[in-house]
Length: 254
Image (tube, rainbow, N blue to C red; front, side, top):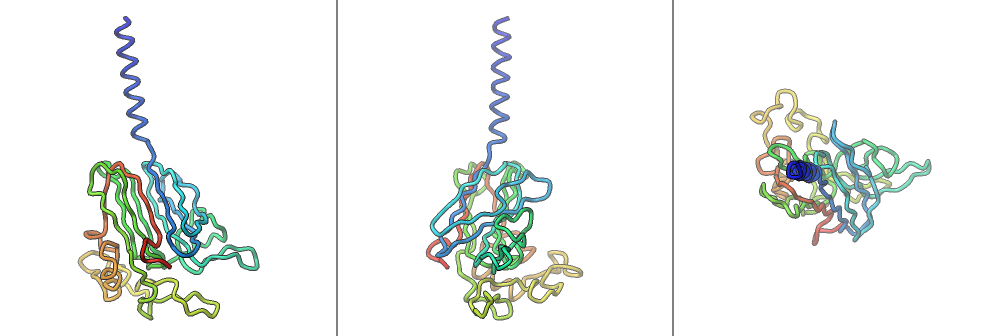
């Protein structure tokens, strides 16, 4: 009887350990190496456990570590040139989420914005991640997996400051009389044409091909998404990793 009780207790303990290991959260360490304050924003995907906070202030040289549910998916980005206007509304010149507050509260980045995209614990237990310039660009960004057990676990990102080199048709100025370029739009946002947006008759990988504008992004940042069907060289996988997300990785600072 004692053996049976011991055996049952041991099995229960092992089962509890397996459950705990299955829900162990991932961590995102978000680092600001830019020369100025940034305001990271976070958008959780539909029907996924919400990640809080949805936005916060991160001063230069500082970092913040978040515990992320293992089944989470969503986007992380950074807003720049932010302030509170005369009406008390929080606004940003680039990658604003439009909430009027530091917290984005379920609103995504208004393009153009450099995006870190994640789907954790997906197919075969792998995390899928990428840095996307499909919605344009506003800051250099690097994703580094730490402690992964399988899946490649390669770093990815866009290390180059593209704002100064942005084609004139895509460049976004800071405003208020300043000509400083704070972001670089995608061709889809700038022109709205189906051939650039991979929509209508261009809605398949065979019909939507790289443009001269997406090639500008791809040449500068070959490991980042440059247009909607740029999967082959832009999506990375890892299992069991934590992630460091660095804005303005050295030596490229703004």
